[in-house]
Length: 348
Ligand SMILES: *Cc1c(COP(=O)(O)O)cnc(C)c1O
Image 1 (spheres, rainbow, N blue to C red):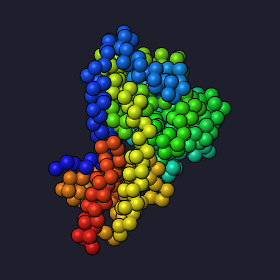
Image 2: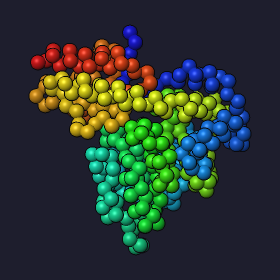
Image 3: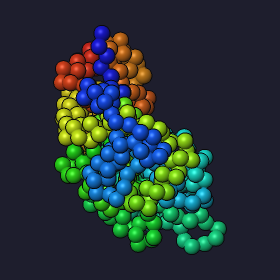
Image 4: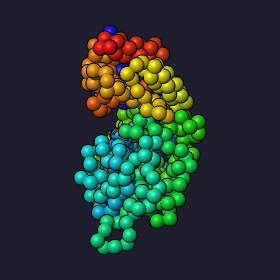
């Protein structure tokens, strides 16, 4: 049985074109800066986002860590969301490895940080307090249901940052999903930030890797930190080659994933006992919830769906996560809605 894997867009396998590009990639020692495929990927990413320079890193986690360490000294503070991936899901690396203090403020339901909350969190010049150095945003916002931040909002945060001499980092693991959802070029969403990380290994289908973009000076610092973190890779062009295919061919088609997420959400919302948050999905993530009167938990739904060859995430007692991606087609969406329906009918 072919599994329908909706747990995440990280499960995406490389495409045929990627496998070919990887097999044929010209490579060299990237620690010497001599891998032509890595260099090409980095140039392409910097051009695409209209930043001076880019750096290929093994993961989004390392991208955020190296970026935040490049902006902050030990003991400095970064302001980020309570629901941010960096705060929740990156092993506390900025603290453990960077000695960086975090100030967590609430995320709004749309993934944003309230400007007034940010302003209040900025420290005054006082020896008792850590030095606020950086603000970090996330787009699309994973834990906030794939919520999309607009360029206007990001510019507003940037203005606030500049007014206080702070830098702004964007965790754009799914930056291109945000751009496609808003129908704007991705560079619009990063014009106002000092640095951005995006993942090649999620909806863009590349097997491994993320890219950091920013100024020449910033990338130079991040490059040194990547080495310290053990992220200096040798013939990494094998991986970068898939990333080049991802940037060339996999961005515009994200609209298909978003359309399927909508179709899935619509189908599920018509089932009695299933609730979908208002105003979502905004990108490729669907977070249905089972109403309290239905005698089924998210874990039981997950287990039951698994028996039908459908993999989903259970992210709360009654909340589930389903993510659309390149390897999910229309028929799989229909099968998933049907399987939900069957399970719900079996208990009603
Ligand atoms: C996946 C993800 C990351 C980390 O990327 P990895 O490649 O899994 O380390 C960072 N931020 C967000 C928002 C993510 O969804």
